[in-house]
Length: 426
Image: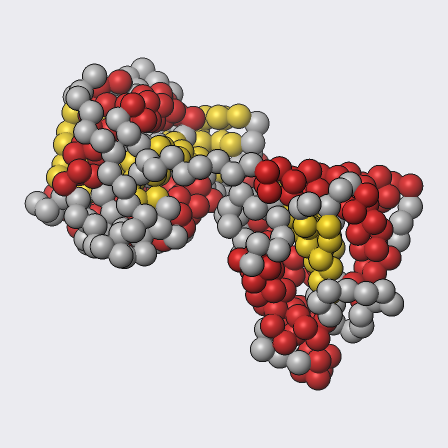
């Protein structure tokens, strides 16, 4: 039988959690109940009391109840995360379910983000209809909007919570039953936009034919951060960083940025990486009304109803070239930069809505000037989405990977590293 941990503030949501427990058990899963509340425990049995949670955070009830609300929430979030992590490591839970408003959601989601990717996590939250990034971040937390506030059991909340109970029970049973064996193939992280999809698909197909498994990340900010977090954790051991546009967002003030440290993790860990300036012709913003006033006179294109793109100018392109050159010059592992001379995205192709050879040349010249000789630079008279360009990048990554010398036993480069079999070119 799969086991689901129910985590939340049972001092204010005791009735709702009792209902959830009954529904999860009715759905066929066992339950471990964790009270991360501050003021009291419910009048029914729980497996971990508020004192247990505070103790797991290195605190106690005296400090917890004396703390202001913000500090108390932080203590219980830290303690709940520690308990949930220990339960998972001990193979005692196969899923985590919680609910709440902003405070409860903060506690529950903090614990959820401590669990590995793939472990079922479901949060019923009144915050699920707005910006969910503070709760989800770069994890696989599933959020469900309850429509009504979580205040008692009524006709609507009963149905929503029953759905949540059935969902987490099914996910937990599926997690317990389905264990896909490790393929033994090296994991490659690749970045993609809709406007670089053709390139990434062709490179991915070549790499998969030659013994790799490719994880593709949408380069919208969380995508790049997720890829680099999986490098840090030792899962991804090579990068096909085709779409580095998140750094253009960082330079120009766009919406889709992964932060200033993007494109540094592979180099810091010494992982093989092949990099291209994919998508750098565009600065992404939300709907047209969200485009800052300074950009409204610039050439723009409505990618879809939620995303408006602004063409990057020569100054921004040159800044991008200097920025990534500095990052890649510091890389401790093998690295190659591929430069497509006929455009950096579908929109930047000859005749495309963002075709601007002058701006593109500013980036190309910056790379020529600022990349050290230790970084291999390969220029091709091709568009980024040309199959020949994509396959050339894939071949180069394969070459770098085979001549790479990981440090034995290293967290990100040693015991987890496997070599693809040598396969003749196809």
